Length: 313
Image (cartoon, rainbow, N blue to C red):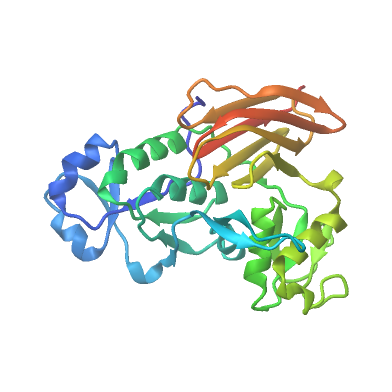
């Protein structure tokens, strides 16, 4: 794994149970919890790390995951396709808010990883049976090498006009791994500006956010895409870069582990290191550096993995 350095704030467990659960928390390697003012009073004599939070200052988000939906393809019969439930669009639109994940069995580890990957301040509610998986994820996140000097890598600017279509447009960008930022005005530094209501993205067409994402990909071109992921429809990536380094967060929203995920990132990186939760010692395979890009395969991907890359000197 990586050096034991910590920069970004880690997600914290928001725990609604009393001090009788302290042993279960310690067994799950969860050293600290967050609690409401009333809940914290009950813990006052329990000799346990408790942070007081006020729920009215938190924005609730749904548990991340995946569901199957029916879609039509041309004139063929309907097919089943995975739909990723990600909170990424909300985090990109309002990165400075404080969030709390609602509880749902089996989702706490992915929720913690999602918040960490998008760099937001978040609390995670968890079911008692999810304490150990969540504790393992928090320990994994804590062990990640310091990446505080890296910045989100994006080359698409989505102009937030206040249109009710913006959330789903950004959502589709995130789900398609089209790395974007949300801005209030056109950004000349972006390779592509997306404004709903412009000739390229008319309001009527934007009612279908899939069409907007497809149009954005066409206008940007695959050659300029900063990050591409092949072999999995349920994996979302986040890319951070700076000072000859890059970090890729890979979030698996599916219910099963994924094998053979191929990743392509712009930039020539001579050192590619992988840390995948659940697969200690895993290494990237078939690394190819060519044409100003680096490609590699993740042999096994569970809930979450971090890839750190460095350029040669």
